[in-house]
Amino acid sequence: IVYQGAAYEGLTCDFLEITASIGKAPAIDPALKHIEKNLKRTPWKYNQFKLLWQAQKPLEKGKAEAIKLKQGSATATLVETVDKSKIRLSLSENHGPKRVLNTTTTIAAADWFITGHPVKDDGHLLAVSCK
Image 1 (tube, rainbow, N blue to C red):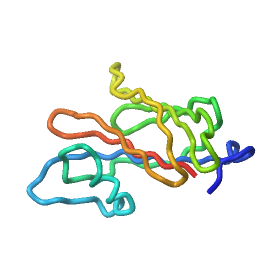
Image 2 (image 1 turned 30 degrees about the vertical axis):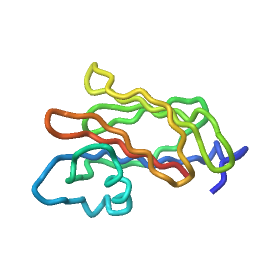
Image 3 (image 1 turned 90 degrees about the horizontal axis):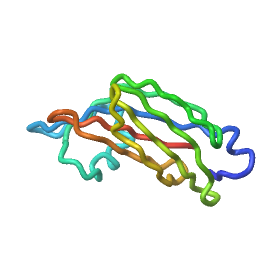
Image 4 (image 1 turned 120 degrees about the horizontal axis):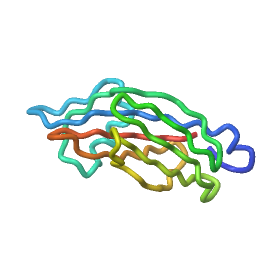
């Protein structure tokens, strides 16, 4: 996958909203098996993951895309192409009036970026992959 020129026009990102918790035995929702290795590498202590919501959204350079989540809302903006196989993406997430995430990251083509925050004893994760 190469991001260049007109690729901005057809860039689509997958968004996964995930709940995370701690349980006696590790458990990953079958719908998340394709990102299992990414979930195991996260810095959190959680060992159980369940998919809440998923969607594909097209992104255009410099245009903020609003994303309605099951728990809150998010905004994604394609900032730029870093090289022919990476993009820079800006993400923010709100839960009610509170902003819980505001970050810019570089994602390799078809790789997953996973971020999250605690919600009481559990976690709320947002995973993004673009192609």
